[in-house]
Length: 463
Image 1 (cartoon, rainbow, N blue to C red):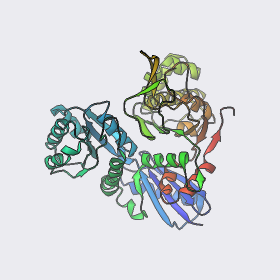
Image 2: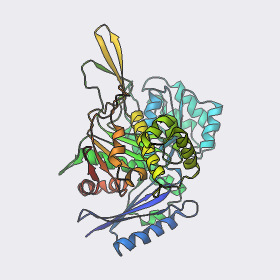
Image 3: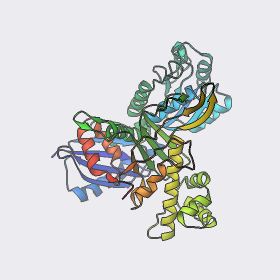
Image 4: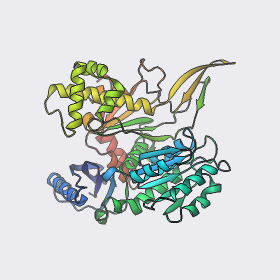
């Protein structure tokens, strides 16, 4: 037996997973309140005691961790055009596991600087212009940022012609120059920037999050939790040497404040009479819906779906839905606990959270007429062919109606131009192991993949 400890320092709970990589089994899991207000290590020690009560005393050969505590990896990015370089900056940031708290296009203003200072980002991503293209915007923005107190590192990943000059303007800041996230019009190159963001997180940000003491336990890996989950999803989808994956997939993590969506799929047009509009999106894509959550952001679900629709699904009159949503927003730690009305409401809210978040993540199609006749224009990823959906989050794992909720990720005639999956099976992460599997996948990919295949509960829609 070779026990490995995997730690996820979450915003609310610190989750621990003990894995035997030789036996390819989960030895035990535990979670404890993340004590970020005092000392994050208190929550870790409480979790270790709970884990030991389940597994007995273990001598861990290796320990790895990820974190979204204290607000996660807070990023602000600025670019030139919203649909192009700003969007590329957004994709790079989200793919690195960051939480975007500010996204700016065109030239920064004095008001923007005041907002950025108030946002207190962990990292600023400065992009703009293709290589050999516009330099005025990124140079202006670098000069504007130079007026701020250098309290955060800046990653420069825009027009290569202007990169060194930007670095000179920002000489008081900790700066990093990466290849342009969009070197040519419509071409993405976000992986180097994502790697740099993760390195900054490892080398600098963990100290600001109160994790420096905890890192004394670690063997090596420390990354943002969303990056670990994305890594796990890529492995589960594509497989590795000696072990096949399950194919293209969508993963949904419905939380109390946000809903994260991951897609591992090409997503390009399939029909001969379909043209693509905008930036071709990454094969492995993550989006975050900051207004869609089961408690802190429950009002966002209500506004997106409407009280009538939620009430119809839950079997509750719309006026009562409004009352209960207001109550949940004030009582964010509430759980149904046998309350049949709240159980039905949570089912409806989780269903609408998934429908809304996946619809926003997936691409769309529109019809247009050209000299060649009817033509379809695709924006975003075509996920209609995806056959696997992976779900996690308290509202989905603490119910036996998980597959019913997950089906709201699928195509609906009510939104005929949304490119959501037409049919898919469901995999449920009931014990919160996805981040843990992403952590060990860099060292033990075959074992991580086999554990996921074994531990994730599989449901077909016919069940």
